[in-house]
Length: 220
Image (cartoon, rainbow, N blue to C red; front, side):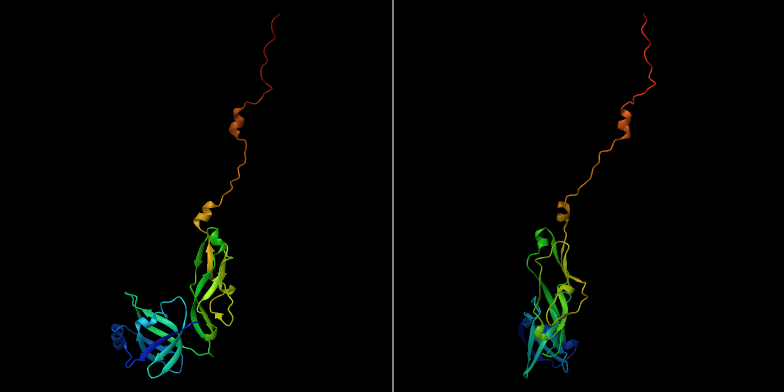
């Protein structure tokens, strides 16, 4: 897992009015929890580029004024309902000896056999909730899909990562290759036909009878 840095300042006041004032200046209210106490701080909106706007999960080294440092992972981010701008960030403090629970993004690796045959890839779970030591957490979970054929899937139970526990039921599908309409239309359908005599055809041919009248003998 990659480590990124975030510099911030401690908040003098905590409340809705103070939070709105910070946001008006382009600052994001934040909180760190999971340690001995909660720490409220704020940081520049632009400093979240490698924390929020990235496909990977990164370890964050938070540096606050007064020489305070925290190792943390992003736990939750809140965005404005209209302009989608970051308005709050929650961080979970971590250490090397205590397991943590985080969301790790999923990435498909390779070209599936089913895609070559006209199927369509479906990623049903783009993030997986996992638990493990921070030293064991990957930036992303890479799944090789090259052997997946149409109708096949990789489920949670198929994923084995040393030192991690995936916190989802084992039968949940993560990535699958699904059949498409084009594949269905190209599949030939065999229709069996059997010639059977019809009663109409039989009726069209007159049957021979034994009671037919014979012509009278010729007169001598």
